[in-house]
Image (cartoon, rainbow, N blue to C red; front, side):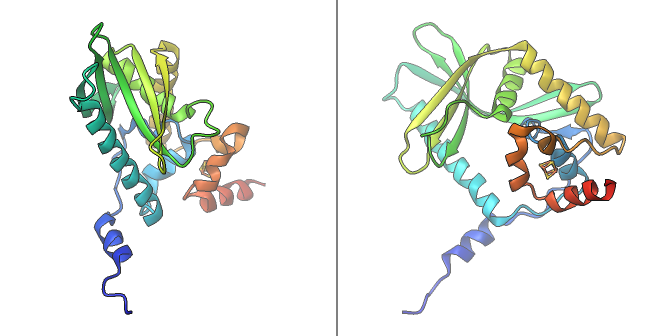
Length: 225
Ligand code: SF4
């Protein structure tokens, strides 16, 4: 039978977004744990997001919407969902960081608040620790809100099983994260491309495989040889 409607095309059209032009001086917590050179490219030379990547983001949003329903459900009276998708702005020196906190919950038995970042993943099997980029993001949010406890909650896509990594606010990680923003801002305003961080640090090398600026980045390194 002929295909009456191509649903893939409908989804692609629905999700299509124009290239997001960036303003120097405005940054996002979600980008600061990436390779700094990639973050720099992203601001200086924005590219359209690949449809596959847009779909992954959208799937992440859907999982988060599900977790919000779970957290605010009356079936879970031991916690209260205090906020979800909470916008946040923070000024450092002469630049600004804006983001959205996934969720803040409050434990009913002691009133303690916990900040939660939700991440969907293909498999929890080999997940031993949360990604460093997510740690930086949540520590930054804890720093700004003053909430001293956080959790990175991974949800497995096919099974809805979850794994949460709880952590306390760590001023050293927050400070290191803020210094990375300073470094990024300095390189953006000074037009100085950062070092290829992901290539130089062994455990970050995997990032290059998913980097839309790999060709440009490799070209620069080859040009220097
Ligand atoms: S290719 Fe690797 S080192 Fe270069 S910008 Fe991308 S992530 Fe960074």
